[in-house]
Amino acid sequence: MSRIAIPELGGSPAESQAILDNVNKTLGFVPNHYRLMSISPNALGGWAGLMGPASRTLDLKTREGIALAVSEANGCNYCLAAHSYVSTNLAKIPPEEIARNRQGDSSDPKRRAAVAFAKALIETRGKVSDAQFAAVKDAAWTDANIVEMIALTAQFLLTNFMNNAAQTPIDFPAVSPAKA
Image 1 (spheres, one colour):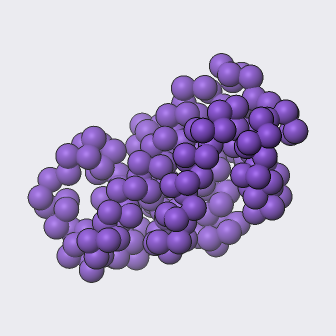
Image 2: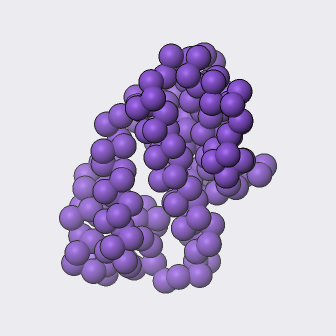
């Protein structure tokens, strides 16, 4: 049970409605996480303000790989379920790859560097080693891409914290819980 009452559809502040409508258009429903954040139009708008531009940077499979690695490292079962759903249904990532991504790995060498870097950012609180930083650069990611990876990691950290703290009920198909 959520520690914060999650508004029913239509029960969110009017300032949050445009974002919720966009989510509904994309996913076909408005997940609990978005309705939870909609309680604060400022929080929802700030998150969406980061998510919008960040969703146009790295490719979808890399973004979802980062989301899975970050959510596993933070032990966020809500986000693992949500991103497993998106990875399967929108990004068309096979289950074996989703499992690898959750561990900070990938079958694609370039994506592996990005996903491992995001996991390292969480595990080291951003204080990655020279070797971890060099690994992502050696995989041919640009400095702009690295900044985008850091921004995405922070965005997913925000949703992990939100859902872990509020204990948001999972409304996506169940996945195995985080080992973190």
